[in-house]
Length: 112
Length: 121
Image (tube, rainbow over all chains, first blue to last red; front, side, top):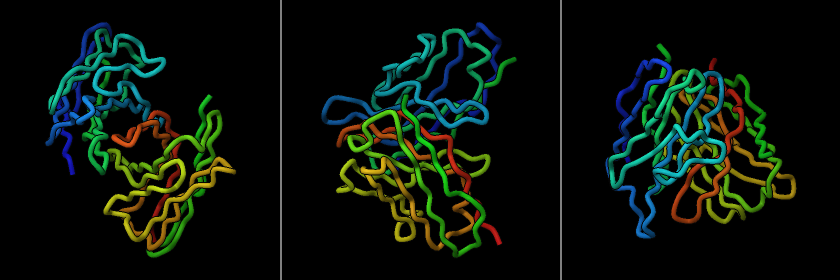
């Protein structure tokens, strides 16, 4: 199975400040079709996960533009340009190119 | 609005069985693959099973293979997970999740609210 490793596992951010989460995969997520199948999810407290970013850098419907994704191959980053109180929760990266789909351990974001 | 509503969770003894259901609405259910994903208490996310739109392709995680069976009824807009020979480590919230990915990928764009399965004597 592909191992997804996130860092840091937790971060505390002042509202209005940026935040960044790294995700590294044990194998390349680049498919022969040219797409890279890396996704980011946010699980807010007491809620089910919600899709933020698909295929590395495309924002899902309704996701604010303060969220952005980047990376290639095996190294990926989720950035929040200005953290807001509603961004608290656990962020997961996920790969969808190899069966089984696997998730990172999660990064807990809290507000200072 | 896409809605996925799971049901059927509860307390079951080790070795017992349970059947989860997921009722879908707000989209053409028969056009989408579906998945079950679980989350043990205080833990991360673990994919459990996948079924294609026509039920022609099915996959399972190694941890549940031979014990769990995924199925769907497109006429009823419903997804199911039959869980047999349950173990303590199957205790988790089980989510159904829609999969808009093509044959090259699996991902989940909408998730239900989850149903809790507790395996304990």
